[in-house]
Image (cartoon, each protein chain N blue to C red):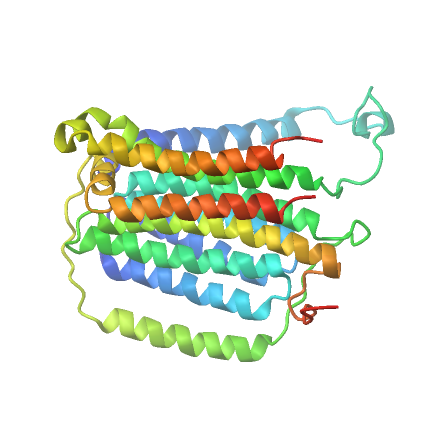
Length: 122
Length: 103
Length: 162
């Protein structure tokens, strides 16, 4: 079983090693002659304004919340969709109907949010 | 050392569950309380998947874990929306200061 | 001690130690990021248990969705002037004792029960098996879940209006 996951672990290992190695090697081998000009956030750009602990607009929150709920829908569509032929062979047309009902229920919510103006940015 | 069995997974999930309860009862911030709830739900999920693997229920345990993940996500979305509304009214999300139902 | 055991202990260590940080660190942003490692470790445990689809769902929904919402929640509910995003704690001692007793009791029960310990061989097609169950025995819970998510959508749209 673990052999199947071997590529995942290899990629994970390469990612960690690459990330650590690039940062470390630039610290170790790179020449360090800092000036105030070089240390500023955008060296030849504009001066940064305010702090980094800025509050985000609540509009982002609404979009994120709607995204999660549609994300959950996709999770149930996925095991149905990748094996649709096998499932159709096994259970017949009811496979299609039950997923159709699920999606229609969701569409009602989508239309409600659309009517309510949940997808408008301003 | 003994080889990994069902008991190891149960041990991990029990520790996670206890830590979740600890987080819920000691933290004041409502967002932190929600994080404790997420820990508890994940502990329950580990149990479901572990019993699905070591018991003879087939894949129903995994499906139940899937349902729990989905319901937890819906719950977190709505609960955080409620927390944001509470912040709008009280200017604070500390659970011990929110003690009024009406002005 | 096989490779499986080593990976299990690694993921269990990541999960439990970062869960401990989640509930003890005072800075909320740090504890949100510790939660990231907890959820990642749990996804690893699912993969070790042969539940690959559940592991991927855990990564997509929890790490990609809920955690982002949590961090939005932290960012939206703290004053800008409050530079150090700290959280108050209370009742540490009684909570430690109570949770210790409760956790010890739970552990004693779990570890002394003689569970069925079959260790079934994992089949390669988890996704197909889940789809089959979803379309066959679990079709009613599946449709009901659609309704629950519909209500969550309606609730989200009406609660979070400006």
